[in-house]
Length: 95
Image 1 (cartoon, rainbow, N blue to C red):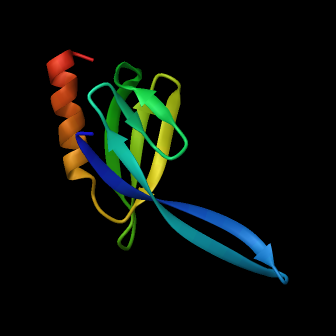
Image 2 (tube, rainbow, N blue to C red; image 1 turned 45 degrees about the horizontal axis):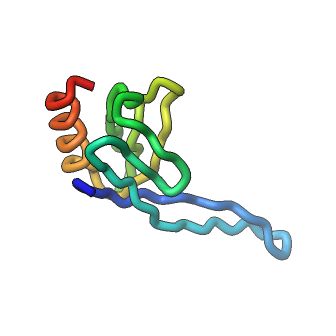
């Protein structure tokens, strides 16, 4: 694994007629040939770009632009290192 970055998953449920939000931390992991999340596995050649957009407050969206669509992940920290590593790999392998 070359680097990783924490993202949040949010689950909503109803209990006793009250809406409850549960946040869990997961990892996006960058390997030499792929990027993985808790629920997805992307080959590097299927990733077209990675971007980040700040939201109001401390959170932002990390976007994986892939050949099968755009995947968004909520994060509390700007994923500078993850994007740098991806771009280095992209330039190395011309993916």
